[in-house]
Length: 121
Image (cartoon, rainbow, N blue to C red; front, side, top):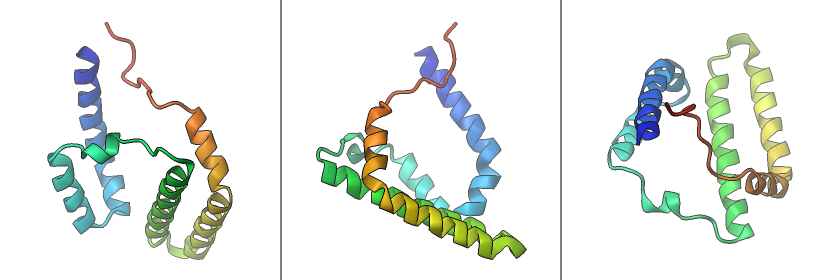
């Protein structure tokens, strides 16, 4: 119980500290929608694992596409380095899509539970 409370406090503190950086790469309308969704709690689908390799690959492709969109949004604020930023983002996307099955296999070997709250007193 103590870990949950400490974890929640850390998450709240980090959200406050990272709010400005997060807002830069997330459009305001999307951020508001996300806050409304989070206020409702976690949807049951978040706890349901992808049962097949095909489903895991589809999920990983969605994650890679979302990462590309975030990177491209960040590139809009890169000024003179925008073209290089976009080029790098697209190259990372191509490389990740080409290796999507390996990335899924790597994710499967990582495990799923990490305790980042630190030692309990």
